[in-house]
Image 1 (cartoon, rainbow over the protein chains, first blue to last red):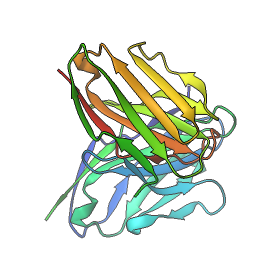
Image 2: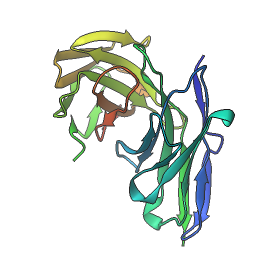
Image 3: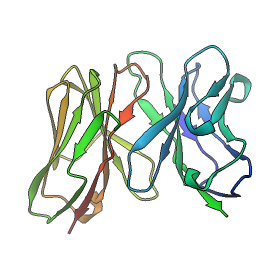
Length: 114
Length: 113
């Protein structure tokens, strides 16, 4: 069965430090890949997406993600974290084809310390 | 403004009440979804509608009843809920059901007492 794994439940980084959130997926073909962010009590906002082409994807708020087919990974990165980045981050895969609902990981909660 | 609007934002209801959650999208999308988000659990897909037709029901109890009168509106009718149904209910829409990006509303925080 298809699955999405976010191995880190909670990460704390210092403001200004770099960030990498991990995401691995299990699927026989290359899916569509997404990262969403959720602030407390809010809905999910799309940060970036990968459909095809360049494996390094730029998103909003200074985030980027790199698709690595050999590792079935789509890790999210930001060179310098701001306090406002504290939120929960969800990786998701969309399965190409007619049954393509999004499958979400369990999320990684990011805390930012001053 | 996400293009997907959910009302109400917060709802407290008793176990014998009947209430409805509303979702509206102005994005011209054809697919709409209900998700349930509970504490410490992954997002659970509940229902999928594509061109107003329900295409997926992920073993959701009958006390949750969806309705999609047109491609822009989606409702979730609630009756005889249990305390464990307390959660954030998220509505989303997408252009089609082909695994492309979904746009989410801000959710309804439901508390069943």
